[in-house]
Length: 121
Image: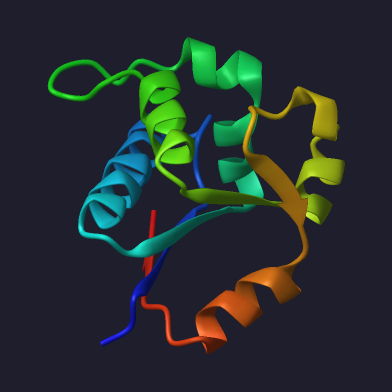
């Protein structure tokens, strides 16, 4: 069984619950001692933008997105943000939360080729 895990999130502004639940699952994977990466693409890139992360609160029973993202990175989770998707939306690297790194699709392919299962949100 692989020790890596990938969560892909493609929605945030269009569906805040998907971004929130994606980070809930990512934190659960870390808690299960999986080397975990979140790949944000399309509208999901907003889940790494400071102003959006501060704004999103899905409500009970979920923690605010800010808390979920901070917990994820504090516990060693990796966040890769699709750089072409960022560019399309006018998002620059300085707008990202600490721990989020712009990356191309090749980084996702490399992670998945190491045997990581992927769950999409």
